[in-house]
Image 1 (cartoon, rainbow, N blue to C red):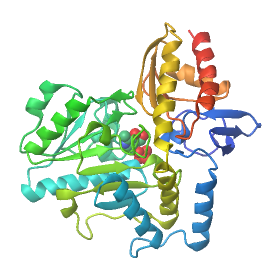
Image 2 (image 1 turned 90 degrees about the vertical axis):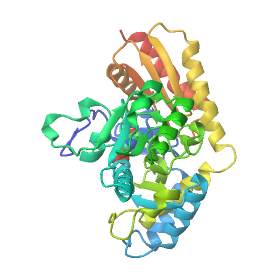
Image 3 (image 1 turned 135 degrees about the vertical axis):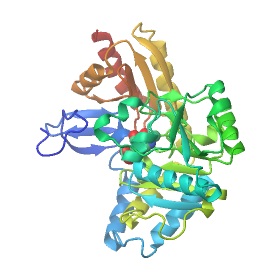
Length: 386
Ligand SMILES: Cc1ncc(COP(=O)(O)O)c(C=O)c1O
């Protein structure tokens, strides 16, 4: 029952009333294993005591104060987040698209300060950067640029990921930034080769451009390291984050360092709700858990365990299993949408990343035992779906 909520995803089939750990419960009391975690958001699962406690405490102190002023919790969160990510400054917004809008504005001004014609941002084919007008255009997939939303902003150029030839011609004096996901999420859970990424970053910097890592989906431990760019070794000047950053409280962040730190001045960019104390309190609880001993190791090991288990089934319908940490894509011969629907009927929430790709983004606290319970449902659905 969608009621009066806009059904823009076109997929309401159940109404959930509560969650605990990696499980969700619907209005009929039926339990589901959650391999979606609110599209990669609920990194600590549902109803995590540390997060609930931190949020409750903050609600009693203050929820929102605006960016006219600083908050103690905001300062503490910025300090700790910047220390973990080795970045220098943090702009806080409310979503991934908003974080990327900040990065796009920063890159454009950075280019303009060198030469007013230095405005082009190179992004990758099959990328996804958000659903605002500029981030849609930054997205390297034609289906996200339909005529009904024109005119789109200019100044984006797309290159094929992992294509060394493309690097020879993509970068010139008109380019102010290379913007890329480290594993492409919505575009199919596509792995970006580390050597190629390093060469792409070198080519960008050689023409005076900066590197923006869109870690909205890959960041906050999703791929087994705090940032996925650590695994690529590209040392981006700008990193964007959202999704898991505050454990489910809406928040986005655009972090920057080095040359990129000298770009924004007061008045260049702002957001009413951005970085409000409630979100920052959630962020601190997430940081404390993610940086605790063994947390990211569990993400790496459980992710690898899931990929190996699916491969070990040797099912002819499974064409490829890939991913990093707990960001997993499975190419199948069946319709991924049909498999997703049947999994839900059988008590497993999964997502898709393209017509024939199932995607798992479970809470990062998932254990192997819980993974097994979800995988048993997934396997039986695959076997019973033509
Ligand atoms: C890589 C990436 N960038 C940006 C976005 C947009 O984030 P949001 O939906 O929070 O605006 C997403 C969302 O899936 C994403 O995966």
